[in-house]
Image (cartoon, rainbow, N blue to C red):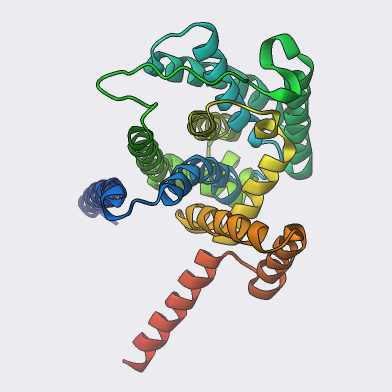
Length: 338
């Protein structure tokens, strides 16, 4: 290939990247407008609450997929950052009463410090060791929450509510404002994670996932890349925790328990890890299952177990993975017939 051809190819790739970025921004704006108009179409508080919960868990699950699906790092302790976001934000608001944007930034800084320290230890490990050491750190944080009763409230959680002083004309004590605010955080968070996944750094992560040894041979700093995505995923999970803290007006030890990480893995299994929106679809499916099954039977654990077996043994992939694979097969078959 000549230098001119190489330059033309590079220019084409840059143009494609820009068009993809603009397309993603437009889709994000349309999604936000649709969500913002939803309260005008229905008076159901349950539906609005459902979307807020989807915002919290969707950010958490999608951030986990940055590790699992894109980097090949299966974390059993990712829920610690969800809990850290909820507790960090709640404690800052209760103890200091600073404006909400300041509390958000401060919580993200705290999460950044914790994620950097924990990630510096964990990302050096491989496969099952990485998974269980992250779980060990989560259990350590959960135990600290339970034992430090004077600060965290122990097993009772943060009680007494979380102050919500108005800022920039936004009053989060108003349910509609909280709904719009949660939707905005969801759309912005998904858009940012989409840009990370589609960036050169995102493709570097895919290379590390497929063959970390080969990636290091071509000059990639595998340790730094893993640590970077570990910290970024922690920050997005922390935002999900803050949304949940606002929704329940408190924080509870269950937010940092290992079952939260298990739900994140389950969500990714349901929705799929090879498509960006898979975790979001999985979040909607899991919340619908939980809300429906718990109303119909007390044996919801058995039902969810059957669902897991169906996806693990029957489909052998998440729903979005199955749909995209089916669509690709149909498209290829149509081309062959044409």
